[in-house]
Image: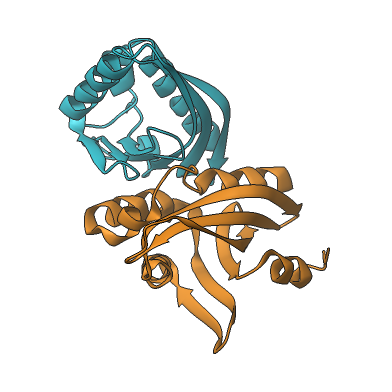
Length: 145
Length: 137
């Protein structure tokens, strides 16, 4: 089952060449994305950003997922992600991610790193926690490098 | 029901590979929707599905989907992990992409026509969302 969780989480991330900005900023595409992903989210689905200066920020439900991405993408004109590796943690899956974006007014794509800790319950995604560094995420799951 | 849904998904994908519109529509209700959020495209109803098949023929005549795994999610949803491959009609370049299709069976065979399966394909070059429904047999 845990390998299925890895496939579920990994499979729902857009491919590395997909720009997230129009996907979440354009109402039509956001609605389409929501319709697709809705069956895969549990009713209590939450998204959280960990490690912000002001503490954890949490979003709830399908609308919260879009709100999260709109907040996250606010500084960017393009944004995409590449998964370096997925770590199977049973009911949880940790995705180690490299992020690439061009900021508003920027001329070059810059590279960053984040990580997503996804919790799967009864075959559906119950929670996503995003960390601002690989080290923070690995520490959170007891896999400090 | 979940195993029936898995078999319906496999039949629908086989119908795409065979370019068999009737077989594909037999898996669908009248209000089938094929949604592709990553490219902002949608194909609605039987006419939409016909247009989808025409579009993939135009882009790559040998477009083919290889099913890696189909997984039921409860009684109303399924995921298909697939790999698609095609050769560009104009360019001759072979492209491939991995996709995850999300299928939403709304009450499956139990309701009258109009019941729908939503199929979504994430990842890959032709990521899409897609609605279809099983034949009411």
